Image 1: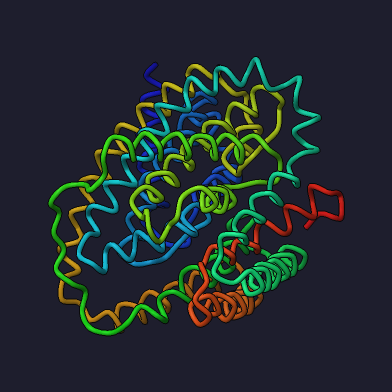
Image 2 (image 1 turned 30 degrees about the vertical axis):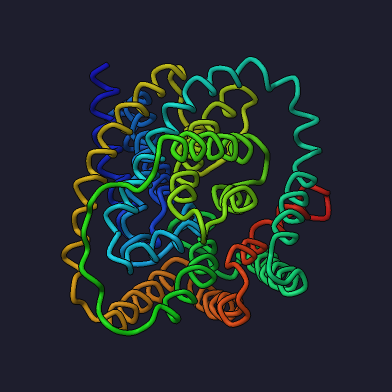
Length: 403
């Protein structure tokens, strides 16, 4: 138990670091940790290392709400949710947005633990059918989104163009060998589509006074958001080729992110933490890796799932408290010039894109930013830029190639 507690404490620290630094994902830290396994395993043992990885993943799910809300910078987990969260911040409700996200992550953990135990016994026999149906599910989601959009033609066009950019980015990712491990191209791709492009239209003036007067969500909205997020998290956590970014798109077909902003924030946060633990269950049940952290786990002698769930629960409690404390930082942004803040954030994102993916990353960032500006110019939801993730997954699911 001491190894679990010590590893959880170290993992929470790493997850907090990756969550608060825009562009640094917990998968990056996992890749670095794997590189040092020959030195770390003899010193700390597999139980400690496993607890570090799992708790870092859980803590990241909580803490990444802070930069996405206050700075408007997404990572792979907050791509679409950053829009309503950052808009609440610009209305002086940033602390509320972060608290709602933290609540969603917490309810997602509570919901996902019994679900994980159930999936271990129910899903393995159904896996061949699940692999086949993945592409159909995504096509159905995209169809619903298009039918509810202000302009079906423009929505399809943005989806396809962003999808082609996603295919191009993944196909030629080898042009950006990263010292931080695989999937480095996701950072400039999603930051351009949902971060820089949004900041360019964020307006002028100063950040308004931030005030927290409570969360404007009833019990019904919390329950509904948790259930929807839980379902989306299970779908993307178990099905091959899907991710939290896909969950954002799935939820957009059920929750209007512009009208029901608070419920959408809570639902996407619940989906992120559910996806994290369901991916862990998939590893134990069918020996498949769904994210970088689980891939790192596969390189060591993994302790029982029950021990890892204990670590995840403790990490969630600690990360929840940390997120609530850090949500109060909203008041420090009051009066800051929004144009200068946006310029500083864009500069930081550009630097991280170059460090993580090189010149090719800068090219992808520029192209993604240009495409990401289109929804703002033609008044359609930004969610159709999720074609960058969804279209490659559809191609992969139907056997048209891998990227």
